[in-house]
Image 1 (cartoon, rainbow, N blue to C red):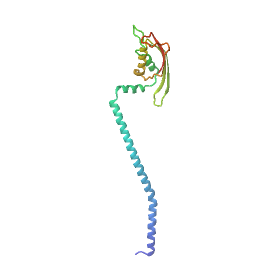
Image 2 (cartoon, rainbow, N blue to C red; image 1 turned 30 degrees about the horizontal axis):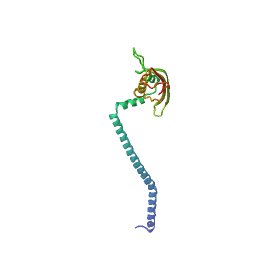
Image 3 (cartoon, one colour; image 1 turned 180 degrees about the vertical axis):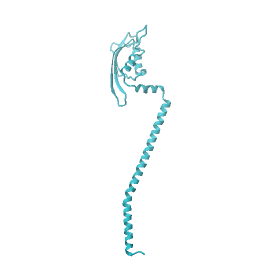
Image 4 (cartoon, helix red, strand yellow; image 1 turned 90 degrees about the horizontal axis):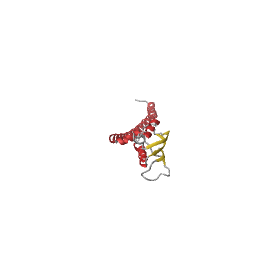
Length: 182
């Protein structure tokens, strides 16, 4: 049997062991619970991101499968880098500026200046082209400007156009001179 002095020590030792166990295990338990909470948050975030990724992949595949040639061509035009020789060719070497053996060109470009401008954060170049041209008729000028803004190998937008005040509004004009900024 146990001594009475040993009976007093057992609850004290047991209480000390329990206290040490709580002091040692409590930080481990809180760390474990924090890791579980963070893991649950990470899993939730990962599933949300996966849903977003799946939606983007579905959108990409729908564009790839149903993308029209026109859309693909517009993207290719926007993706071109600013190259002065190619820009000059796109503006000056067109069917409108070339004459035939028997007929002169419907559009004659007098002066042209190119400014590469600045590169935007999107990677696109925002350049300026200023040119003065002479056309046989208003229709030729309109057709040439329509070609530059829609059918050219680059994407041009018409910024300004300067017409002389003396241009009559008729279909039959012997010639028209103007300045254009693209």
